[in-house]
Length: 239
Image (cartoon, rainbow, N blue to C red; front, side, top):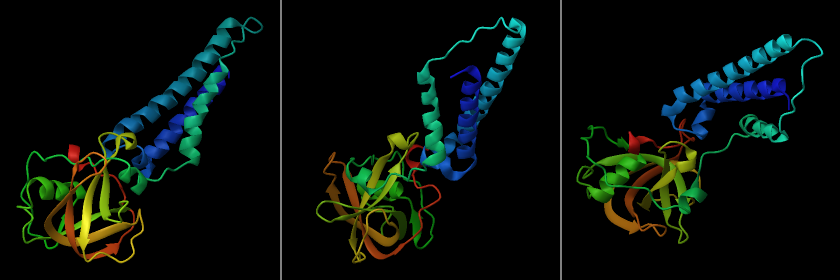
C-alpha cells in the first residue's frame, strides 16, 4: 500500500464516518450526544487524506524525477479497509432480547424523583418507571396510568419483560433495564417486538437471575406493537 492508497482509504473512511454522522446510522454505534465528535472525526480523516496526497506530491517534486525512492508500506495497513467495509456494507441492528437476557439489569437507585406532569396516560421511559417502581415503591406512580415503550424479551420460564438498552457511551457498553409484565398481556409475544404498554404500578418485583438486580413489574391494561423508535437506546440514566 503506497501513500496515495493510504490517502484514498483515509478519505473513504472519513466520508463513511461523515455519512453515518449525518444520518441516523450513527445511532447504531454511539449515543446521540457524540454526534458532533463523530462529525469532527470524519472531517479530520478527510483533511488527513488531503494532506497526505499534498505532501506526497510535494516530496516527489523536491526529489526530482528519477531520484525518488519507492517505500513499500506494510501490508497490514490494508486492514484499514475493514472498518470502511463495515460502515458501507453492514448496518447492524440495535441490541435486542438475546443481549438483554444474557446480561443483568443495569437499574440503579435514582438520585431524585422529579415531579411528574398530570398527563393521562403518563408517558415514561423504561428506566424512569423501573427506578420509581423498584426504589421509590411506586409513591410517585400511585393511581396513575403510565405508558412505556420497549422491546419484548422472554425469560426461560416464559415471563415477558419490556426492555430498553441503556447507554453510557456506545453500543459496546449497552446494558439492559427490564420491566416484568403482568396483567392483560397479549397472548402471543415475539422477542424483539416493540410494544407500547399502558398499565399501572404494581408492587410485584423479582430478582434478575444474572446479577440479582431488581426487576419491577407493570400491571398491563393495554398493549400494542409500535415501530422501532428513531433512537432505540435509552440515554436518560446518565443525563
